[in-house]
Length: 131
Image (cartoon, rainbow, N blue to C red; front, side, top):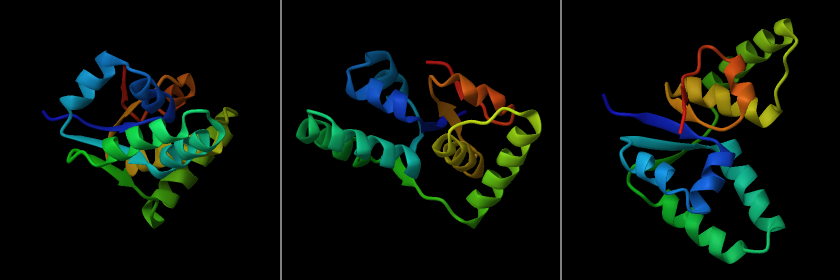
């Protein structure tokens, strides 16, 4: 079975900081998706960081790989978002808004999520990749 994944901002940052194990795992994936909120968070970090040019080059090279694609929210994403929001509200366990969008995109595209954020464990319907 081929692995199709979404990558969270913290793991994308780890990749660009030289995490060889993560790079190896991503190289074996059929598809690596970058949710739009991850792209936006990373770009915001670029603008606030001291290595803008180097990190922009890394991001563009990563996005140009044939197995990597940017995934954008749709109406279906908003439906997933609304259900996840209601689920968390009922449980009294909110998460950051961008992470809610990342979770919704992950569900919409039927992906596994690569992250270090523990609050994604609040979504039993999302499969997490421990890397």
